[in-house]
Length: 323
Image (cartoon, rainbow, N blue to C red):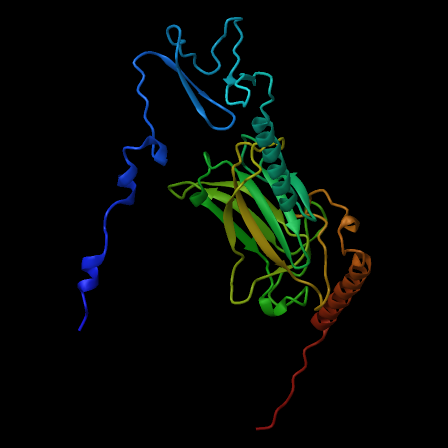
């Protein structure tokens, strides 16, 4: 059985109420002033309360002109009690914001053009301005990012078509079955291995505005278990900088996997599309062996071409098979 008698002997009184009438017991002290007064806080935290000799001074908004006519915001929280003039203090917050924004824009653009560059779309039916084209690459992929103004071309209207990509099984054979085997571009005379087209489709679906159209200078391949090259719409974090792309606040991003003649090879692209200015790939870190790989690829392409020609010219022979 539980003994509840101990509850009868417990004291539930308020210990703070015993000294409520004694102001020196540490409780709050309230002083009522019948006339305007002045309160001074000492350096040790003590309070001095006295009557003011006249009417209270008028309240002056922060930054309002003083007696000399200059707008001087003051802070009177110093230990000495004297006002501190902060009118000449430099507002560094705005400068820091501008510097941080410019740094963010530069970092974003460096990411968009890593091992690549910046151009403008050359083949387009858009007549109101130049659309920025950023391209970057690593050892295995190439990414094209085209800026566009969403005020004229909603993100839902964007379509991307990539033709000529190799199958995933042919990713280590630059001229595999079912691919465009390096035909010559009529405009430039350079080899092309497919094409990329970015268009905006009108609401009724009857009109297309070409934002980008070009031929690929190198072979690409599809990703595993995919039958087309995917794309996505991104925010252009660098819009509004000094690149003249302030209205192009959106980017259509197309990432393509590189195809190579044999496994283990790395081919660096010198341009995003046929006809665009070439970049110096010797400045890319890790691209020192590019010239040897180029020579090997050229010899591979020539040998493959001769093989196809020889196979095509071979006369057909009939073979009799016994039943």
